[in-house]
Image (cartoon, rainbow over all chains, first blue to last red):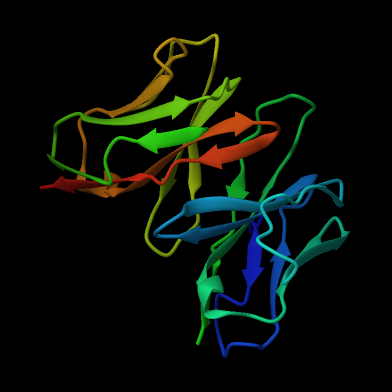
Amino acid sequence: DAGVIQSPRHEVTEMGQEVTLRCKPISGHNSLFWYRQTMMRGLELLIYFNNNVPIDDSGMPEDRFSAKMPNASFSTLKIQPSEPRDSAVYFCASSSHTSGGASEQFFGPGTRLTVL
Amino acid sequence: SQKIEQNSEALNIQEGKTATLTCNYTNYSPAYLQWYRQDPGRGPVFLLLIRENEKEKRKERLKVTFDTTLKQSLFHITASQPADSATYLCALRSQGNLIFGKGTKLSVKP
């Protein structure tokens, strides 16, 4: 298996532009997570899907952020409009969630976003 | 307020020594705790999981302890090697999600 795939790996954009980050989870995994990592705040959970349904989006900073999972093999995280403070590394992770169980998460390589 | 803290941002040790990293938490009652390794420019990689009813877990040169009374987990790497140099993150489960510490950057000098 290729692992979790994210694209693009690097994105540089100007303030106000729309940014779309993409993720392909590991085949067979039923949970997908979007995280943001910065030096100041560390790794923060933005949103979590189970069986393609958003379960917890309390970490999404504001309405400028949105995430979708149209099928089991694809998810997007969109920022519109982007702002310089959104600059960070965004990770997608997937796991095989069992009810009440402890599941390790498999992380993608991340997308480094720079908003000028 | 809820907090998960890793005791130091950086730890420097000599090759062959045992590295000990600390993870403390407050106002959580996690059913389990996980440790991840993160190399520069890459995503975290899962290392070990320890449940609340387990005192200790081992995997090769790695050992994790979990003290729910002290609200603390210790992560040990014995016979450390320069290849062990990385950032190590602890994570605990809260309300179905994993909450991560900010990590400790370990440097093992030859």
